[in-house]
Image (cartoon, rainbow, N blue to C red; front, side, top):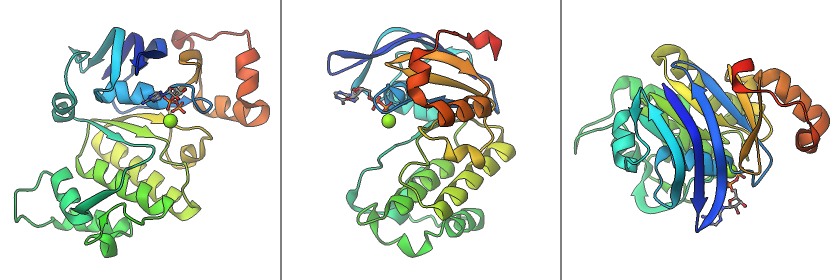
Length: 248
Ligand code: ADP
Ligand code: MG
């Protein structure tokens, strides 16, 4: 489904991600752990094709096709969708219209029953006539972001810390919706999480730790999370026991 080979990425002339290798099979969830500033968002932006994130070397393959030099729209059409860590406020655009764009509606076309049910499940029905994210709380913002992503029906979800700055109720709601979608559709997810709370609701299959832009270690997500919680990312930096992706 997604294969990242020896990928290095720079932002504003500075190299942030170095030599990343990662293979995500169809229907699986790959958790990417790492401290703040380790390059997790940069990695996702590069996979999504956000233009300011420049690929220096390496390859990105999606369903066997080399997408390294495709632009963001072409990647979106293939079924790759990104949920931002910090979703921006969009003044002048109502949530209703944004959601319709995401769902691929024609002008004037209404939501289907299934889509309305999803909007209700996300507790966002009363937000439809508000500007996207304007004055939304942390949890509301993340709910709106993940809802937009799910309405696109992506094959590959790039989820950037869907659990950061989110209240417990929203976390559960977001996590369960992501897990349901994966189970029903067979989509895959590259799931960035700093503290791992989302993994209580979304079942991850494999994981890696990113440190200073490089993958330090691959392993079982829940075992890794336990170690990170116990010993912190500092112990990852000090660790000399390297585990390769083939050992997962
Ligand atoms: P993480 O998501 O793991 O916290 P990021 O990928 O956001 O890490 O950032 C990694 C490093 O890249 C940080 O040092 C950050 O300051 C830098 N960086 C990210 N985006 C930009 C940008 N647009 N301009 C300059 N530096 C950036
Ligand atoms: Mg980040």
